[in-house]
Length: 143
Image (cartoon, rainbow, N blue to C red; front, side, top):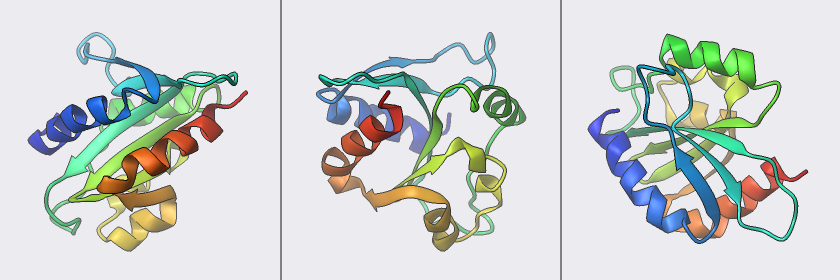
């Protein structure tokens, strides 16, 4: 995990704590490719567990600064995405993109923000996370 991803992770946890229950996945050597966290919305409705892979850059997306997806992550997503919702939550500077895991091969090819926008379920500014992300995740995981 790079410094930008660690910063994103540390920021996301307290911001979203009122809206979801989550479990971080720490054992990279034991279970390579497993997304960074799984969550379930706090809600009166029935939801299944969703999975998020966090990615972040503190510099603009470009040909020299792209989002890296490890081979084991591609493999995990290909195997498990048909059975559970897996998404990438990507922060580029102050913008956040929620992208369906089905685009795992396209994400590392993106060198422009417009590409991430076109792949996104939703994109928003980091300051709007609490207003935007919980509702989207509830929809994604609703049974």
